[in-house]
Amino acid sequence: MAEDAERPGAAWWVPDRLEPGTLRASLQHCQGCELYRDATQPVPGEGPADAAVMVVGEQPGDQEDKAGRPFVGPAGKLLDRALGDAGLDPAAVFRTNAVKHFRWEAAHGKRLHKGPKRTHITACGPWLVAEIDMVRPVGVVLLGATAGSAVFGPGFRVTAMRGQVLSWPEESTRPHSWTPEWAVATAHPSAVLRSRQRDEDYQRLVDDLAVAAQLQAGPVTS
Ligand code: URA
Ligand code: SF4
Image (cartoon, rainbow, N blue to C red):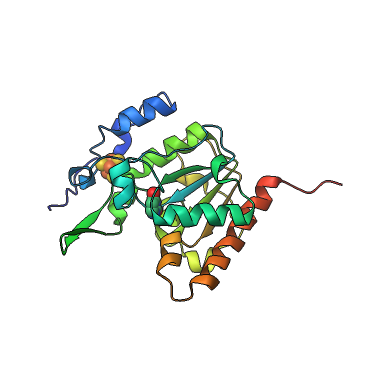
């Protein structure tokens, strides 16, 4: 498939009115990069529109692409369990992805996940900014390198930054938009599923999410 370097990015399709139905409807038409061509449908973020915490993944997987909903597959199940174990109510978080269409390649009659390129992350950025402006989360959890680099730029290293309280980079959002108070980066749940030290890596994921849970709970007052 030809990569369309001259495609404009998503900004043209993002509506002025930031409300879940409007955002969802407009997203269906996005052709901000070439990924819309081979995907079933775009996958908008989902969760309470006033969630205090937003969780950002990479891109929809095979099951999310078919369902049109984020984190409904194996990674999502592991994420829910880890959120619960960390003390965050999975039903209370807004879940979304840095890139809204599934990027894949055909292999042995299957659709194999292929990570988004920098150009896709950049092209799709306006949707993530719009979701952040709509939900106005107090904090954002970044799952893996793609989500991390969508907010902090290509130099961001999850391994070096995970589990720390990060402040939101002003330059990642458009003028006059919402600035979350904190961000916490951690591994992507898919990486935990693939890991050979799964128990250990799962615990590290929970420990990082617990930092977010503590921030969300706020300072302990006596
Ligand atoms: N992995 C992601 O990053 N997002 C999903 O929605 C599902 C799997
Ligand atoms: Fe638009 Fe993002 Fe889909 Fe590209 S991946 S077409 S920018 S919604």
